[in-house]
Amino acid sequence: MEIKSTNIQGCYILEPVICRDARGVFMETFHKKKLETLLGGPLEFVQDNQSVSNRNVLRGLHFQKGEHAQAKLGRVVRGRALDVVVDLREKSKSFREVFTIELSEYNNLQLFIPRGLAHGFLALEDQTVFSYKCDAYYYPGSESGIIYNDPELAIDWGIPDSELIISEKDRRLQYLKELFP
Ligand SMILES: Cc1cn([C@H]2C[C@H](O)[C@@H](COP(=O)(O)OP(=O)(O)O[C@H]3O[C@H](C)C(=O)[C@H](O)[C@H]3O)O2)c(=O)[nH]c1=O
Image (tube, rainbow, N blue to C red; front, side):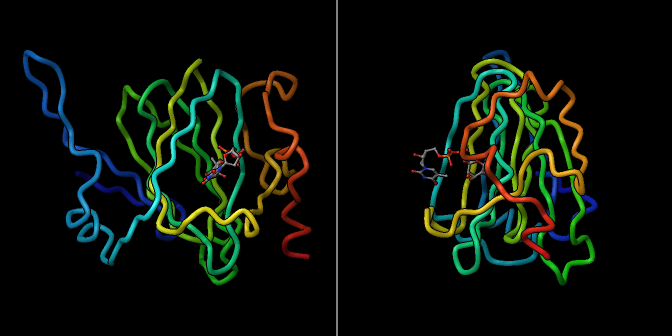
């Protein structure tokens, strides 16, 4: 497993070792001890999630507040997605910064997302399967988020707004200026 830093403190790109032979491909998609060594600290994932999205579906930008904040290890098992995180940690050197990366079944990349970041993605192919580990349980009462088209973030999703498929819930998410008045 190789690790690369991003512009966001504690957020890392992970590239698994791909073992290919005449039968196909094998890779370790998660190895607790190796990842703890690479990240330099303990990891205790407690919940795995998976969503399937057709092309142009945008999920996010979501986070859980306070004690229910989740670190995530995300990857695309099938298809392609533009993955986006925003640093919402006021004490972080990268506070308010955005990082985007394409995760796909073709590049096998993963993204480690520390607690305190908002996360979302745009599916770039039909039936894109996004799978991720969380180090805290889902806690509906702590759910929050930032709206995908917040002008302060100016995220380029790469397609016209009219083509985006977004849940009513996500269309009602707050702006950064409401979260940090
Ligand atoms: C997140 C979650 C949701 N649910 C239920 C709640 C709804 O009935 C249904 C769909 O939930 P939601 O629309 O919040 O799903 P996404 O839009 O994919 O949410 C995720 O989107 C972005 C990309 C994230 O990083 C978050 O982990 C997560 O918020 O699954 C659960 O039962 N458990 C869960 O952990």
